[in-house]
Image 1 (tube, helix red, strand yellow):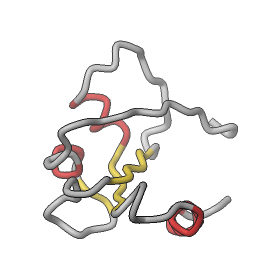
Image 2 (cartoon, one colour):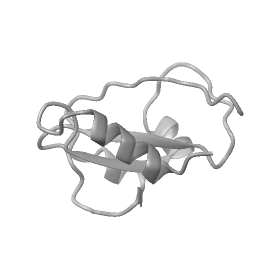
Image 3 (cartoon, helix red, strand yellow):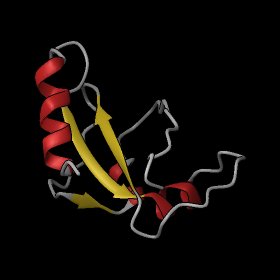
Image 4 (cartoon, one colour):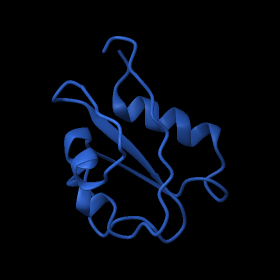
Length: 89
C-alpha cells in the first residue's frame, strides 16, 4: 500500500505546478462530508481521508500534514470533487 506522501509526490511530479496544483493537504473524510452536503451517503472506514490539491491563492494558512476540514478549505472559493472508491474498501 502506498503512503500518502508517495502518492502526492508522484502526482506533483507528473503535473506542472504552475498550471495545476501549488499545494496539497489531507483531512479526515468524515469531517469533510459533514461540513459539505454532497447529497450522497458515504460508508467509509473511520480512517478514510480526503486529498486536497490547491490552486493559486487557495492554500491554507496552516502548513500541517493533516488539517481539520474547515481549515483545509478556508481559502477555497471553488471546490471540484472527484469521488473515488478504494478497491480494498
